[in-house]
Image (tube, rainbow, N blue to C red; front, top):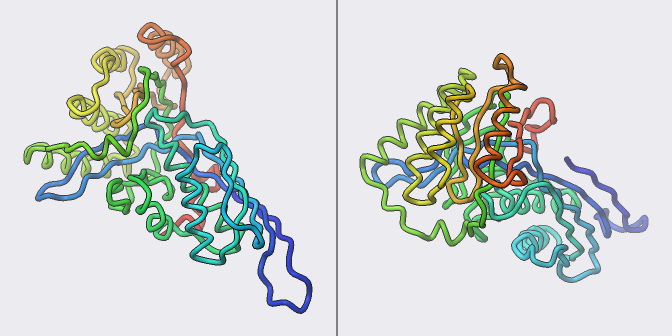
Length: 318
């Protein structure tokens, strides 16, 4: 989403915005369908699971203003992104306001979505483009990042902040998610040596091939199998106390598997929207998940339909 209003300089001046307001957004993800590392000292990577939850950035540009004020004031990384876009294109400053429906520190890409939405809003206010490759360049200097600057599911080198491969659009699914509590600092987590074995790296490469094939085929069951295997492989790095129970519950209610935030506290059951008795299965999942954690920590998320939302426009392509 982008919305832009301009106040121009008087006639006789070379055109450029002196003041402008722009609003842009970026979607979040429910953890990762897959996260690991590739063979032969290949890069760490993840595969995104885009959901219909967003971060929104509103930027008010003023060419006569120095610096950027950000609200909430704790969003210092977003301020750095805004200042970097301004320095690259025009100078000036303004105010940045961030909002959205992504909880922080849970593994739903809230920080990445904030930064991508910020880059888009500032660029829109200045009247310049912000393609994903340029967004990667900006964010690479700040922190490891999810691939939420790209439409659809992608394989992304989160530590290098670079696209590895496009995966495709996921079939419509609901994730009944729970929050096991606490938060995880993604930057600190990514500094921890993962020490993947050679066997694990080859397995991650195989799983990446499998999920790319599964997404192209719209095979929700195969997507769920890969996500479940990745969740179990990640137990030694970021343990989920409910993983075994959630895996068993998925099988009981006819889900396709579990998906976790590999560096967060979220874990969820994946239920295709077109399965028979979908509503009763979802209700059962919500009820049973509420028995594993406090009911206030159970939420439903939808995979993102990029055609319906209008995402994937030319500005979203490399």
